[in-house]
Length: 301
Picture 1 (cartoon, rainbow, N blue to C red):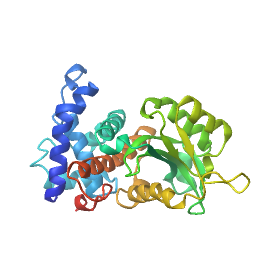
Picture 2: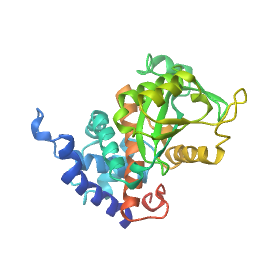
Picture 3: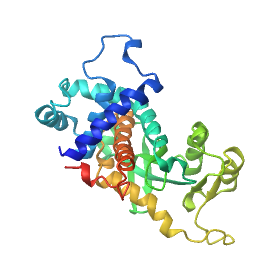
């Protein structure tokens, strides 16, 4: 682990202990059971280190690596089964911390938000689909950008122009994009500012959805023009590429499609951990005034 990742984890740990976790009221002393040797702040830092260093979600391989190389920073490193249980249970906490980090960056005040979805495959064979614990939650969908079908979920992401996650969620691909996004935005409407511009693709075209964004959220939906309507915004290809590059970082450097989740809680927590790693990298890049806020290269070795 290099000095830059060491600095990121140290800064993140101090911020979690001093400000973020107390504000979220996640103190273990108020919960039943024995206090764990590895506290929540250490667990979150370990999750960030796992996905920045390895990308893949093989927790057994990560625990072996951490116990061999990171015991100086994390002396209470649990066994693989204990680490897996803690990560699966920490999904809501990870999501709350992502929001806290997003609010702690300058891009939080940007007027522009990017909206899109991407596949999160959970199985590649019919036998896997038949015996998976995700049956009834995951489903078949089609990825137009790769011209392929998949079985799993779709990740819906609303992020800032630099890639900082703001609102996100997983949904069955059979559910319409507009319907899913409307539920997410309605649930997290407090994270949408008045006058915000939400940039989406053509798949989010629809009068009802646009009316919801305008009337209920007080925001503005901007998307590429369809061929069967009057010109309004143009193609927007260059700006649309920003959100595609965010997904490329999640898939290429953070291994989004190799999440390894086998249950609903497991998939949710592991996808959340990858988004947390992205958020932590962007957050720290703002602190050190790095030129490229979404670059994770300094932390991945």
